[in-house]
Length: 300
Image: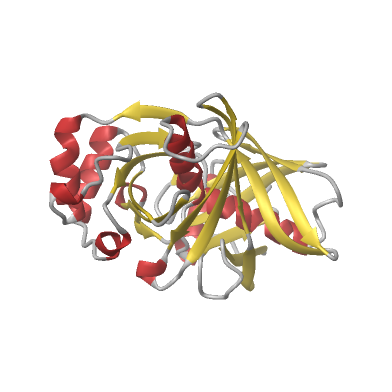
C-alpha cells in the first residue's frame, strides 16, 4: 500500500490555492503506477519521491495525463508535507533532483511550526513571441487584441516549464476571459510551451494571473508557482519591476476566477538587469491523506 497526501499550496485555507498529490515514498512504483495514481487523484500535478539520501531527494511530477519536468506548487506542497511529517531536518536546506536540475528548498518556521516553503527555481530563460501572433493569442483567450497591454512584455519564459505570458490591461478583463481551449492547445504546441499565462497589473510589483494549460491536460491551473517565478524574472529582465540594489520582489494573485484564490511570493536576485536567482515561496495546508494499492509494477 502506498501512502499519499492531498495538499493545497499557496494558501492556508482548505479548498483554496492549488491542489497537489504528494507521495513521500515511491521507490517501488513504476512510471505506469505513478501515472495511474496521478490520474486517480485528479490534481493538476502529483509529485513522487523516488529516492531519498539525507537532504537530497529524487522527484518526478505527473499531471493526470503525462509526466512533466517540473511543478512549482507541487514542490511547495512536498516541502510542507515533509516538514509536517518531521522529515525535514531542522536548520537544513533540502535539495530536489528534478528533470530540470537540482532545486533547493528552504523552510521558514515560527515557534517550530512550518509556515512557508521557499524554492530556488531553475535559472530563467526567455524567448521572443512573434508580433504576428498577438491577434491569435487574443482570439484564443476570447478578447480583442486591443485589450493586450502594450507596455508590458508579451514573451515566452521558463524557470522549469515554458509558458507564453500575455499582458492584459486590467484584472477585470482577466477575470472575464472565456478562452477557446482548443486554440490555446494548438498555440501552445506551435510555440513549444506548456501554457498560455495571462496576467494584469494590480500595482508596481503585484499582478493577477490565469494560466491555461490544456496541452498538459490542465484546462486552467489554479495557482502556478513555476510560472509566477518566470513572470517576475521576465518583468525584471525588461526593467518592468522595481529593483533595490540587487534585489526585487513581487506577488502574484491567482485562482480567484476558479474560486480557489492563492498567492505566490517571488524574490529575485539580479546582476544589473540579469536575473541570477529566482526564489518562489508559499504556504500550504494538508487537505486529506489516504493509501492506494498500485495495479502494476511494470517498467519504471
